[in-house]
Image (cartoon, rainbow, N blue to C red; front, side):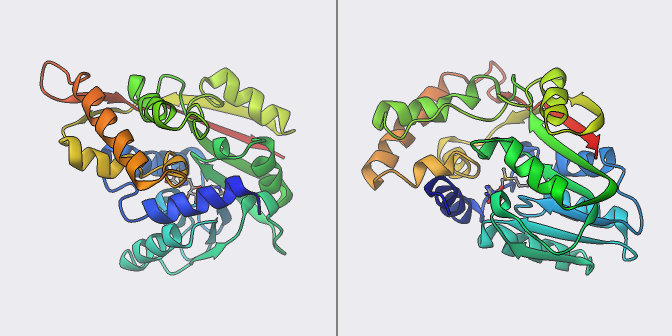
Length: 272
Ligand SMILES: C[S@@+](CC[C@H](N)C(=O)[O-])C[C@H]1O[C@@H](n2cnc3c(N)ncnc32)[C@H](O)[C@@H]1O
């Protein structure tokens, strides 16, 4: 497994406890929307790659019902532990979770639908996860994915990355969210390049307002892809990132005392 993938696994294992806890993260909101957009139906067999804590998986499984089933795969065992707890507490028993690197996914079975919520940007070649999903589809099957729009989170998208650049320029990476599926046109191009047909894309808006104070907010900062950078820093470097970030964020507080975080996303679907 590549070092990049190992960093992601370590980062998401660490982030699992707080990941998506804040409804402002949009993960549950968009999980439901992607399940609806994918038209997952009763009786279908669905594969959800990079399933995380189950935001998409749970919504999909509710649509397939017990006559269908869902397999969620992820590299982070801790993220999937939370997904298992969630499906159990909702009484959804027709779901299974397995640990796999999606970049090397090779399962015996084939599915009616494969989905991926907010994750293809983590792969250095975004076509790789889409091809792996495609290989696991029955004839006539479909793929549905979500990606952040390019104006997602406004200035907040860059801020944590800028903080890392100040402390450890060698670890710095620009934010990936929003760069790939950032517009409906880019989403269509991504899925058509993968050889999918009848591709459709839709933009959705989700405006959120953050009220967390600096420390509580910082606890959430690592709860996403950014955690892969934090796990590469020494404790004093993490602290330097925290101090700068909390201070810079304070300057972006709105006149109503809250922080405005727009969370537009693009949903896309295509058929084999
Ligand atoms: C931003 S989360 C998205 C989770 C979920 N789909 C959602 O919409 O909330 C990204 C997930 O992708 C997983 N991931 C990243 N790279 C992966 C890989 N190569 N194989 C499997 N999972 C991976 C991470 O562990 C993490 O759970």
